[in-house]
Amino acid sequence: MSNKQKIVSGLVEVNKSHSQKRKCDSPGCLKEGVFPAPRSRQKLTEYLWFCLEHIRVYNRSWNFYEGMSDADVEKQVRHDITWERPTWPCSGKLRDNHPNFDMGIFSRKNWDQHELSYTTTNTSGWRPRPNSDQEKALKELSLQGLVTRDIVKAQYKNLAKKYHPDTKGGDKSAEERLKRVNNAYSLLMSCEELI
Image (tube, rainbow, N blue to C red; front, top):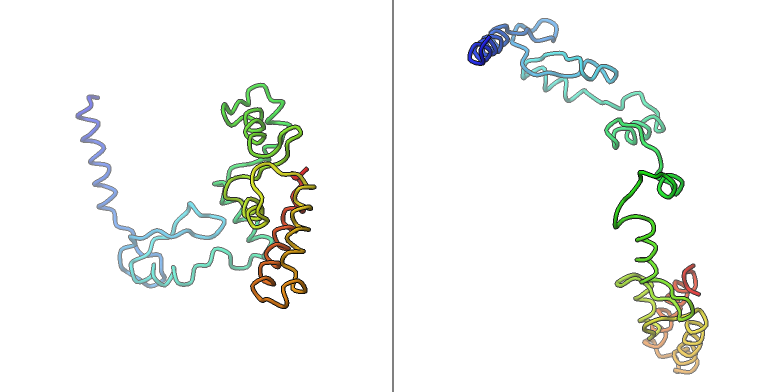
């Protein structure tokens, strides 16, 4: 069979399928069923065919999650997020020990080196990531560059003495500044990277 004959026979098949009209699956309706709708949640690839009027009724009443518990809904949503494909965590075991797991510049080794450039040095101190909350907290404490836990504590003590309401005679702006200093100090002291 030549390509031309295949194309012609394909067109004939398409025309036959268009000429065979489906009846609307709604009981008592004699109109043509043009619009597909899933039979049920379990049979999403098996269709009922409706006319425009009845597909609208069907769509208004269709609720995929009807009758499911909250846990079942959550499970279904998680399942749909990955296109119903199995997943597993990309733990260090797979990433670091699997011989064919090479992510190039995103490999653990390169990432660790990248992290070191932002976070710690051997003895000099710690530097937060640019534009992070920790960097803003350092600016609030009037600190720049590499810092240690002792440097942050010392600077906090100086600023707490400077802006304490008792030393400023109840000045509201000093009180607000001290609140910001306290919040910044709390944030920085909760950082595990700060040495």
